Length: 92
Image 1 (cartoon, rainbow, N blue to C red):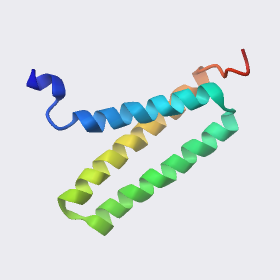
Image 2: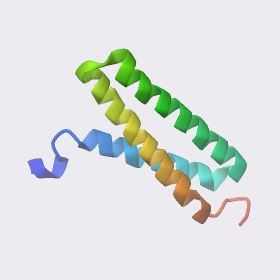
Image 3: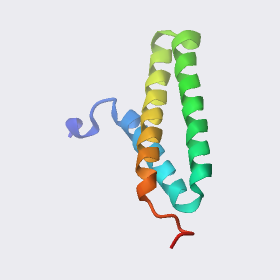
């Protein structure tokens, strides 16, 4: 049963999945240009948090925040990559 939770990695994996799902849901309801602007904004925010966690916080606390930020960044990239294949509700 312990292997199912992947030790301490489960929250980081869930952040990635939730970020991808949020971008995919946004792709369903808003225009493509707005979606790409939101994705770019998320990208800048998460890269900023990642850089701050490395240089501003440091130590183990900074590494944990960096992992969450990198996971959200990966989820945003996956969601943005999948979004062209999702039909917009207005196009239906």
